[in-house]
Length: 162
Image (cartoon, rainbow, N blue to C red; front, side):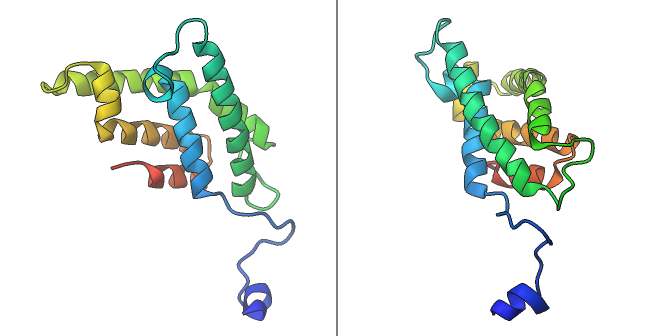
């Protein structure tokens, strides 16, 4: 098997050996991003005006560091995603788009809420309807896709609840 893996049937890239992006890490990243986007619903309900910014900032710091590492693992050879020279540049660009993604998610939430007469309030819809979790994951996957991180976007979409 070693000869097959290393020589005759190798599918590894030349150069530095890196592990592939991790599904388990992406599940944690997506959970953290969801908590940062909706901290009182998916994060901690007791957050108030004094500590919500700290919670979101800390959560994003941890999550974006992990995402940067996954971008490194998902890079093909020495070439990163087209248009980006470094993983941290891609991560910063991704982070800068999160407020716009949250705005889209709020629009999605409002539209779904208006269309469902059984729903009583937004929090119920956010945490009680699995479709909203899928929408969150797919909005994040679409952002990654638009930034050129196609492999990462595919992994994120695959993790989305259905």
